[in-house]
Length: 98
Image (cartoon, rainbow, N blue to C red):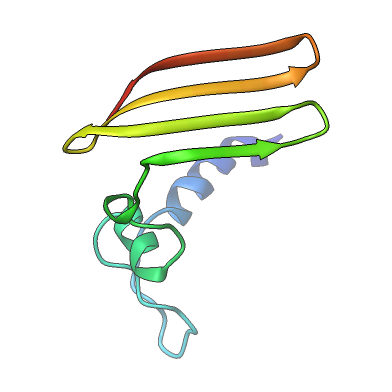
């Protein structure tokens, strides 16, 4: 029971950014925010380099899902989507995206 009150304190202290102990095997902290670090490490794609425009489809056992996007301005698109969940079940939508 005594350990329960100490758990929040231990978690808070473990989140502190203290100095590394000499000889410890630590990697340098990434500069900037988490998204920037992920971009630099190649873990995610830079959204500014993506081209959304086009028609895409993916067939499955239930049917074919479709998505299309047409550029209408700087980072603006008109989009359409149809998702098929079986022979008698699907949904569709259209609109705009940025």
